[in-house]
Image (cartoon, rainbow, N blue to C red):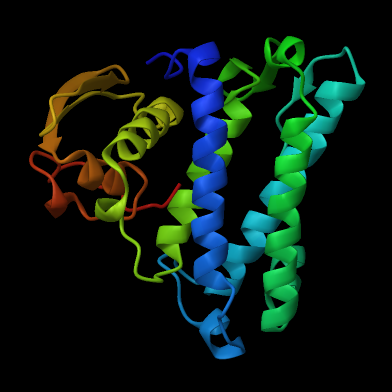
Length: 238
């Protein structure tokens, strides 16, 4: 599957969506207590604090990538790795520190993306999926913010998202899931009329709403949420 979206036409829209999604996340987390942050997320073994720490690290990574794109003519490599021990330490802080860290990292992302000129947006970044448009950084951040907002179990589900956002994230997650389907050619037919195909191998077709398919392809919903996925368990969050 190809990288989703008409890149030049989509960048402004994606930047706007990233701002809105980030504001919703920060609005829902600003009043959390220490106990709230210690509450479980949808990710096995992770509290809400772990999810927040991960988002902060991701924001720092994206900020560094944007800076390299501005400062160097060399190819920029996508590298957002961090030490697990550092994540666990970061997640043990109090509610004020967690909230400030998330807010500051989100603000840094916005400032870094603002520094990228139209000419720089035309460049590519090197990823495990090959060379992608620099705008993939924005789409990836939207996905991180929205999906992990759902993970925090603060009353937001995929079914609560605007249909256009659900479709965009479904396309992105099918694209980034390509390596998972080395033995299956998966066709996804949505109730809303979209058909997506990914992978190679034994043909398989699943059907459902785009919100439920998004939850399933990201490992947040069981296969029972859609039709035809009984033999394909993706219950491993990505």
